[in-house]
Amino acid sequence: MTASPAGQLRSRRAWGILLALLGIETVAGVIALIPLGVAFFAADGEEAGQRVSVLLGGLLAIVWIAVTFTGALRARASWARGSALTLHVLMFAAGTGILQYGLADSWIGWSLVIAAFVGFFSALAARPEYTAAADEDGTTTEV
Image (cartoon, rainbow, N blue to C red; front, top):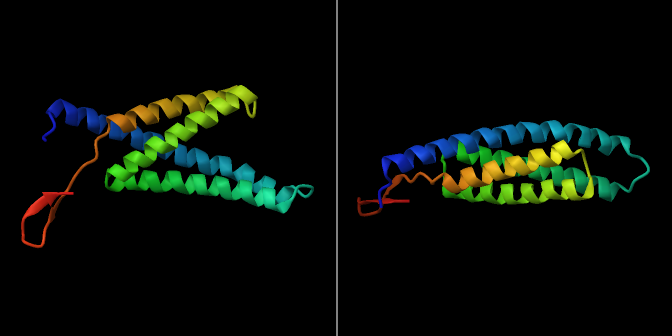
């Protein structure tokens, strides 16, 4: 099935928006991780297990976003698109949780919700790019 030129343009725009958003999310996540790391070493009264789990959760989230960003930047593959969809569904849940329970300032919750919507719908519109791979018998098929 071949895509129409308009569909390709829409997909390229969606990939561009998704890449920009994932890049911003990666940088913002690293910046948000700095106070978390400082609090990890400054908190003496809390149990070490709780501090380690929060710090590891933050680190894993940032690594996940960075890997998705790198994969989308290099290959625009279907796994990066699926990962971006999942990330933005979870980001929407985090944003609504912040807004409902007052866990942080409301602007943080709204920022997460808006970024989640933009990321989710741009990942839906972005189509994976397929490359032709040579089979053993010399014919090429789409991967």
